[in-house]
Length: 469
Image (tube, rainbow, N blue to C red; front, side):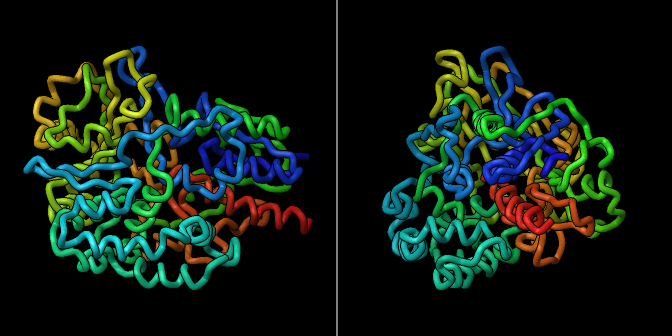
């Protein structure tokens, strides 16, 4: 009998398996797709030689993850590559704000009226970032805070809505860039704890940047899987699990799946019936004949580029998708250009690029024209560079990754109490009514992102149980 079986070979499932195997437990992973990766894969989606990431591409939380940093993933091929700037946010007038490794450069891009306010906001937390990140991403009850005072101060600033935090800025450049940071998790700007989301992304950039993995996000997953195999674990792909009886006997079963899939497979009935899924996304992967022709200079060297003309436009786009049930007329876009940092991702002189906008959960329309109109506002002539495109709306995203219910790449609405207390209001979110069944996906704290911390935290709950039995 195995000690643990993990269902789903995304970053969280693989991290949970590694953490258990490191502690001497026998572990096997079962994955429905033909390769490991979940939300961290790399495929030739458009043309031969153009290597795209179907979901995540830039990894501020990955390089800053306490779980990943404790593992020897570099020995297994993971290499982080950095663009000249972690992120840029252009404006219609040809200027841009930036999120740089340098706090000073970032503050200066907002203008003199907001530079000091931004410095005061981040500089109080940056020296304690590593401890704060561990405390913030280990909640709840997986580890006692190492610095409860800093964590409490962070909570005072971050738990109110981001709209409150943005009141300290006088001009819209700083507000717009910060609104875009919050929108990475598709949360309405006025929601509970959205200030913390923006702060985490900003601090992560200043601490270690927003890198890509050499060769694509698949490199993260492949490194985790290779390390797991060296620890004695096994990985089985092309193995769809429909019920617990499909799996070998084990003392514990750990699911890197959506809560609803777990309930169906494990026979938990309506246990997660109240779990809410959030907006979906419409994503386009591009093969380009050259770099994106940004009007502003700063985006040309940035790994990630946010597209939204102002904080009001971003807020309206988020509200349309999450509250009004319609696709926005001017979508807020998150774009990445991995080949700026990693030329191996495309043939010489060519580039890969992706963009996505928010749409209602399960939306079946086509946002291509609206996305490309937005891109042309800030990069005139963009369409002329397109060699090929691969589009994926909510149905296609859900078909490619069962955790993306209705196209929700966050695996659950990141709003209200569900931002922190997910998948249920519980002090033990990784446990289920079945004593041998656990959940470790992005539907558990600390939530979405390629960082492995949900798997790391769940593994703690599992090994504590295994040691008791």
